[in-house]
Length: 120
Picture 1 (cartoon, rainbow, N blue to C red):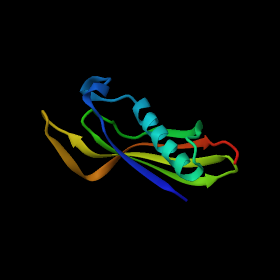
Picture 2 (tube, rainbow, N blue to C red; picture 1 turned 90 degrees about the vertical axis):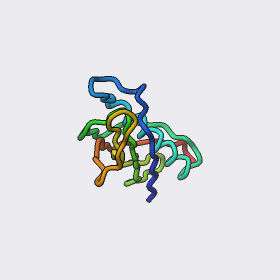
Picture 3 (cartoon, rainbow, N blue to C red; picture 1 turned 30 degrees about the vertical axis):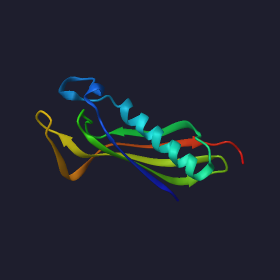
Picture 4 (cartoon, rainbow, N blue to C red; picture 1 turned 180 degrees about the horizontal axis):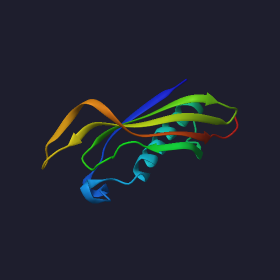
């Protein structure tokens, strides 16, 4: 199967709650970007997101974080692709403009989703 990984810095403009927390929809948008690349690589089409089977918010995502977003195709149908997703925090902003690389990434969000592509 195929795995695609993106990295993304979370700008402070995306902080939505106290403590520079970012809303959960931010991770879902990143899953959509990864799914689009997967569909392009496999099918030459951007595809469409059809559904999520499971979404779990396991740890906070904060402005100033550097995220690693991974999607792995776990099942392929004629037009559907089931993908396991994961957002990991690999760096975290600290005071001011300082930041630190985390010794162990923090798994922040996981999901399983289904995308569909046009018939070949």
